[in-house]
Image 1 (tube, chains in turn brown, blue):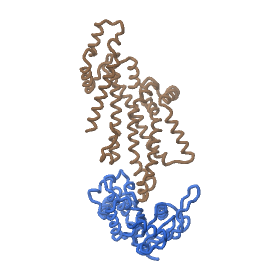
Image 2: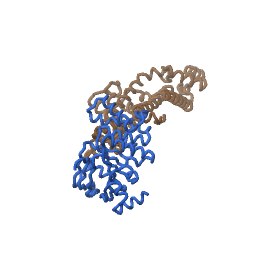
Image 3: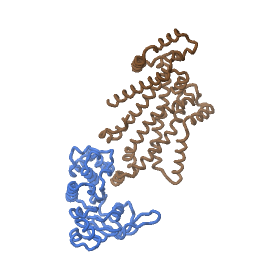
Image 4: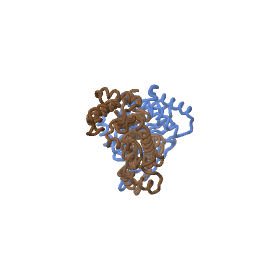
Length: 307
Length: 237
C-alpha cells in the first residue's frame, strides 16, 4: 500500500516536471504550427482548439485528470487523440521490452551459475573475452547487423514494415545480448564472494555437496543484488528499445517518439515521457517486491532500495 | 584400546601451495568415549588444520586418523556467519535430516522440535532468522543442527569465544548436559584456559603444530611441565 502511494506521488511529480518543462521550452505551439504568415485570429482559434488560451495550472490539472481517464490530449501534428496514436505502438514496445527482459532472465541466471561451476585454464580467459565482446557491442550495431543478415539476407522479416514476432525476437536479442553478459558477470562474482562465506562451510559440514550448496544456500543469497540489477535493467531497456526500433524499423513507441520530437508534437512527447517514467518507477517497485519475496531479512529491517 | 571415539596416530599434515608446507608435526592423541578433550594453543598453531585433518578435508601426509563413530560434526566460533542469513532456525536444524532423507516431514518436525527443546531455544525463536537471534541463541541453533543426526563425536571450534561471560557459562553448561544426555564426546578447541578448565576432562597443549603437553586438566594446570604451558597459565591468571 505504502509502495503504491509512493509510486503515485513520484508519477505526479514527474508529470508536473514534464509539463512544466515543455511549458518553458515550447514558445507558442499554435504560432509554430501555423508558421510566420498566420493572422492573430487564426492563432487564437488554434489556441482555443488545443486549450492553449487557458492559464498554465488549469491546463496542467486538465491534462493530469485526463491522464487518469486515458485521455492524453490532442496531437498537434495529427490532430488526433494521443492515446489513439500511441496505443498500438506502445504495445509493440512493451512486447519488445518484455521479450528481451524474459530472455535476459531466462538465459543469464543459468548461464551465470554455469560460468561459476565450470572454470579452467582455457575456459576462464575464453569466458572473459566473450563477456567483454558481448558487453562492448552496442544494440544498434547488432540491430543493423541482424537487419542485414536475417532481414535482408535471409528474409526472415521485413525491416520497417510489420512488427511480427520474428522481427521483435531479433530486436529483443540485440537488446538482450550486452545485458545478459553484464548479469552473468554480476551473478558469477556475487556467487564467488558468497561461496567464501562461513555459512557455506557449515552447510558443507552438515552434509551438503557443492551443487546443493549452490542451489539451496548461495543462489538465494546472491539473487538480491542480481534482482536489483535486473530491475535497473528493466528500466533501462526502454532506452535501448528506442534505439533498436529506430535501427531495425520496428514501428514502436521509440520511433514515434523520435518523429514527434522532430515535429515538436509536445502532447505526444509528454505522454511518452510519462509512460517511460512510469515504466522506470514500476521496474524499481517490482525489483523491490521480488527482493522482499526472496530475502526475508528485508522484511524485518524494512531496508531496500529507495524509490 | 576399547571405548575410543577417535584416534589420531602420528599425523603430519600441511598445505600444498608452491611446495609443501608442513603445519602439523607428529600429532598423536586419542579421545575416549564420553570424554571432553580440550585443545589449547595460540592462533596459528594449527588447531584449525587439525580439525580439517580429523574431518577428512585434508589428507595427512603420514600417520592415520581413525574414527570409531560415524558422522563427526562440528560447530564454529562465529555462529552468526555460520548460519545462512536467509533461513530461520527450524530450517537450519532440519536441513541435515532432509539431506539424510530417511524421515518424512512429520518425523523430521518431531525430531527438530525435540532437539530445539533440548538446546533450550525459546519457542518464540524457532521461526526467527539468524539476524533476529542473540549470540547465545545462534550458537544453540548451530549446536542443534550439528546434533540433529545424533553423532557421537563433536568438534567445537572455539564455540564460546565470541560470547560474553554469562552466555559462555550457559553454553558450556549446555554442552556438558548434552554430553551426558546424548552420549557425546567432544574435541573442544579454545584459547581460553579458564573455559577449558571448567569444561574439559583432558587437555592438549599445542605449539607450532606440535603437541607439547597432554594430560588430565588437573595435572596440566597444577603441574605444567613444558615452558609454553607455564607461560600460558601465567598469562591467563
